[in-house]
Amino acid sequence: MPRWYVIQVGAGRDDIVLERVRRRAAELAEAGEVAPQALARVFSPRYETQAKVKGEYRLVRRRLTPGYLVAASSRPQDLERVCRTAGEFARLLRNEEGFTPLSDDEAAWMAAFTKEGRRAVPMSTAVKEGDEVVVTEGPLLGCAFPVKRIDRHRSTAWLEVTICGRAKEVPVGLRVVARRDGDRRSDS
Image (cartoon, rainbow, N blue to C red):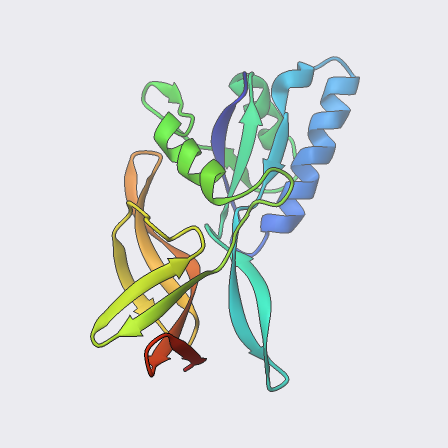
């Protein structure tokens, strides 16, 4: 079964490198230079939030971890070769012990918050009750990760998660609505 590995890429080059890694993996596999399991899939994790576009709020997708891709592979040595020959800066993360896959917990939270074929964390909704923000729906409902901060104007919350053994703040979409007169809600 493939494990998930992290590929570091150049700033702002996520989508270009993603396509080049896909293409290069197919070329090398077809030539028999790497195993077909070198790259099961690769994606740029994203999150959904609201942004004001031409005066209207619209649902947009933003990068969850800019500068990093996630690749599923059963053959990290072959994946490293694919990255090294992709024609762009693409480095498979490793430590002194070798190529380090995401831990089962790290892969589980990403898999739980996103769906296969659409690796974007959906937007959550919360209600502001006095000084408290209470999540009412979405993937943050009952979330075990600490919320470090919330930006209501950008409809974003930052969670502290562990990725490759390091604590990192990652953004997720969070629309906070005000509560009026009992259960009636309105955007704020």
